[in-house]
Amino acid sequence: MTILAVAAGFAADLAFGDPRWLPHPVVAMGRAITWAEGRLRGAFPQTSAGTRAAGLVLAVALPLACGLLTWGILHLCGMVHSGLRFVAEAWTSYQILAACELRRQSLAVARAFSKGGLVAAREAVGLIVGRDTSVLDEQGVARAVVETVAENASDGVIAPLFYLMIGGAPLGMAYKAVNTLDSMVGYKNERYIDFGCASARLDDAANWIPSRLSALLMIAVCPIVGLDARGAARIWRRDRRRHASPNAAQTESACAGALGLRLAGPAVYFGKLVEKPTIGDASREIEWGDIARATRLMLAASVCALVVFGAARAAVVLAVGAMA
Image 1 (cartoon, rainbow, N blue to C red):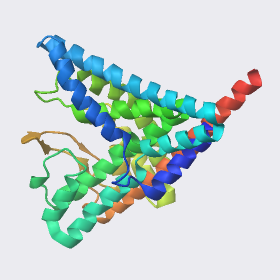
Image 2: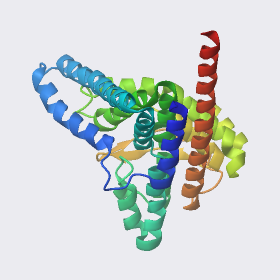
Image 3: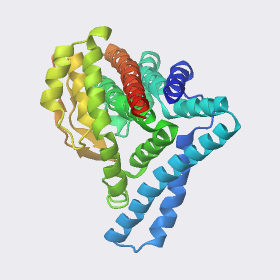
């Protein structure tokens, strides 16, 4: 039933995305993080070790609470009717996945440029990236979008599918909490270098396997979307470790090779220039059409992930059943 529920949630996400009027669990997680941060900081000693301990409590408590709450809701629904449990798990899976929204917001940047020029494009890309967009030129904006699509193909779609297929909606929601924690407190700045340390490390651990599977799936589907599989594999092997994060360059390198582009490099965050290595070869200049190509690669890899992970779960279930 979980396989069908996840597939239904995936289809709903592709069809509807995240309507603005619909309550979303990530919003609730964000409010919980903000609420808990102040209280935890006050409850622990105002030292580096105390702040790290406070952050560790949050990093453990939120994913655990989200997973248990989701399990409880599904259990209660199952007590009423198995069909209601299926609907609840499909709905939760739909809320966890973000393929449509990633595609929509990425393509919106190109549309903003065509209608309002560079200023409008900078405002649009500022909604989906953490860097300072005021200093970006046209190519910088397009590059930032492609990098975001590549990285979030794993974080926003393929990694959630991975955990949904392993442990259903409860594990998928726990992963979403881990990812949300990292996006809110996992920064290496003065405020969060200690408090966000546990969240950042937990996110790195949770994404270690999915990010590598995501890169391999991107390479595999390149021929389907008309991109360069050999180039993707070559750049992935060469550049997959060229990032401060152990995971981010996995999908960025595969995408860069597939498109024949150079991604990453220096960027401005919170007013500071951060030197980062480049990923890929500049076989050609980036163009606005590369955003659409990157989103097609992301969607194809996501569909492939659904099929592969679903088949793997079905095989495990059948093998366990045969042994029983």
